[in-house]
Amino acid sequence: MQQEVIISVKDLVKNYGDFNAVKGISFDVYKGEIFGLLGPNGAGKSTTLEIIETLRDKTSGQIIVDGINLDKAPNEIKKIIGVQLQSSGYYPGLNLTELIYFFAGLYNEKVNAMELLDIVNLRDKAKAKYKELSGGQKQRFSIATTLINKPKIIFLDEPTTGLDPQARRNLWELIIKIRSEGTTVIITTHYMDEAEILCDRVAIIDSGNIIALATPDKLIDELVASGFEKPKEVKQANLEDVFIHLTGKNLREE
Image (cartoon, rainbow, N blue to C red; front, side):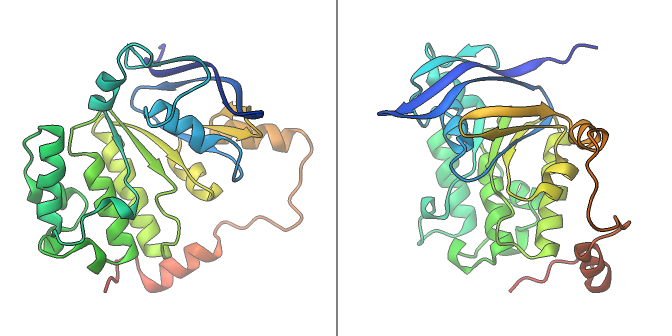
């Protein structure tokens, strides 16, 4: 069965003066998948996402998001996407409930703040200020804010960076839950185990070019078929699994 394309990127180019940051890349994202855009720092992945998110102008190419042409109706695209804010985007004087209602007002959306906090397991922090949250709680709240306008697509930029193993696994479960309810998720991460577990497909971008695009399993199988061998015997678990097993999955937040 052919999958429905929700984001189509064709021949995308972004130049900064003489520097060619994105070099004519093309890819599709399917409706309802978790799609990973992976690459080293400076590879062009953040630039690519910011262009799709309407936050940065492109030099050339075509982008269609849920049937909407970016060149013709960028404001219509903004209505159907959710973008994770950086920490500087939260007013320090407002508590979590007030922040949600503030952002809902910007979107002209009616929301139930407690229901939204329930989704990200933060009901007990409803009256807390953003700065009072732990790292994992801040990341979960930032994901909650992407859901305020009931988006078809959410963009998560390195959502688990700096989190401890429990908080990281908890966030994985949240991302899978959001996708299970029909939302398409685009994620960037430097953690390859995270991409392998979460992503239906990944595009690997380097120096402004996509150098691979497939399911994680297919990319791994192709590498093994090429004769690649790990220098160390592969075990059925890793040290993070040991840590989680011994300490439990429960979040321990200040």
